[in-house]
Length: 161
Image (cartoon, rainbow, N blue to C red; front, side):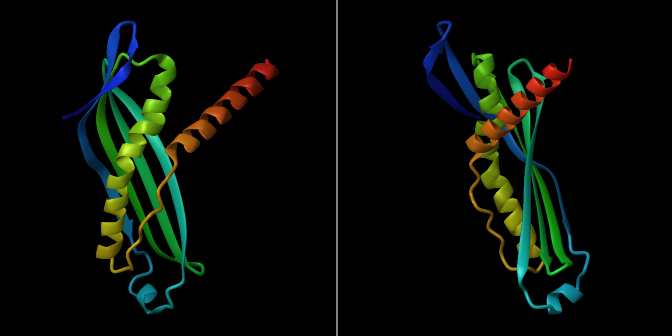
């Protein structure tokens, strides 16, 4: 178990963050047009999607699942589809409500992404395709964008009533 102690104090109690477990929850790899795709000129177009899901397991214990979906096409033909659900169990003690969102929506997925990236790379290579290295992701910016969208939706639904 990895533990981080945050220097700031919340109500005289120290914040604690720990990683209990990191694991691959689910994965899939499909090559719907094999073996034909291996005979075509390799000019891939990559479509990449991320999503996260948070599930509270116990008081201060959360499972965060990062889903990485990669679809690669050559022209109109799908070469492969890889999807990985990389998960972790995290303990977060003494964080404020305002801090929990960024911790679960940005900090934890940022920890999980290198593991998911490695699994995707391995799946693609074992599928017979050239190695795929996913670029780093700015989870802070994605979380901020998501939070802003949620605020706009809330404001929009309030103005309708």
